[in-house]
Length: 383
Image (cartoon, rainbow, N blue to C red):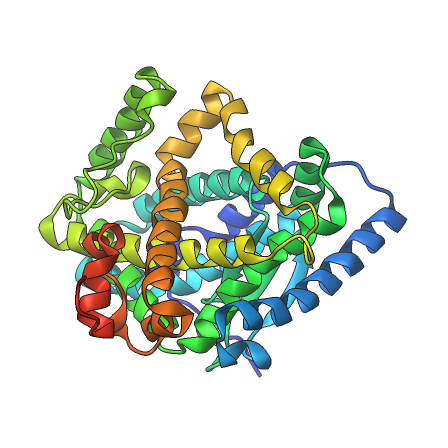
């Protein structure tokens, strides 16, 4: 059966082959391991990923954790992670790109599009190469897009886990289980809320469509985002990002996504920020809910893991700010405070209403005011 051909212009707007090739060339190999050591690490991570599911089920009470057949678990190296994300980006951005191609038909010369697509591919490849050395694991809900109703895939990046456990001098068995608890929680979230994948896909498509529609202005807005990130670095670590006052309703993301300046784009970004805060915060709550009987050195791991962020150099700091990674770290903290507050007030079963329907997702304001989410969704009177 022949492979379906993508329109040439669609492919050239972002040259995906260039993106994958660039990432493969730039990605670092990670810590040195023998073939035998690699095999042991891979098998151990697979075992830890399997073992963590039972703990996620016990902590969350979500029945979706009983039988996770909606997705696959892969232990990968950095290059494989980068290539997998190129595939997902290609599938995820296809609707917005096709829309732009249709709107701009006849206005873009093939040569100009090819040059621009190559440049975009190089930029994307460089970003993924950088991220491939930082990501410990990732649940990708969009892996099956265009391939039927199948679920996503969980990617566990083995060399990065080994590198960090060595850097922090923590117990490898404990650290690997701790990481897998977080990542498997993401897998359970999407299994418990099968509508979430499509909702995020639609939201991201609207956001990217707005970016691509900004013909002539996107480059300047990206430049402005980069300059803003550099300026923030100059203010020092104490002013880490442009976090708005909690509950102000202003999106808290910085970096690349800050180019979404129109009201509709900002509203979408605010919603996406809230959802990501929920997902990341919930996963953090689960990974920290284990006690010493499950992960004996969990307190040491958390303390050392949190402290390592202060050791970044200026170049990495700039890159992280430009990509919005510092905003992502705030999502972990804000989301964890939200989940903790809700669970303390109405229990985990009450919190799990968040997975029932899209209307139950918290707003960004509610992330900072969990009592308002409780009143709206759980119907609990304020004390």
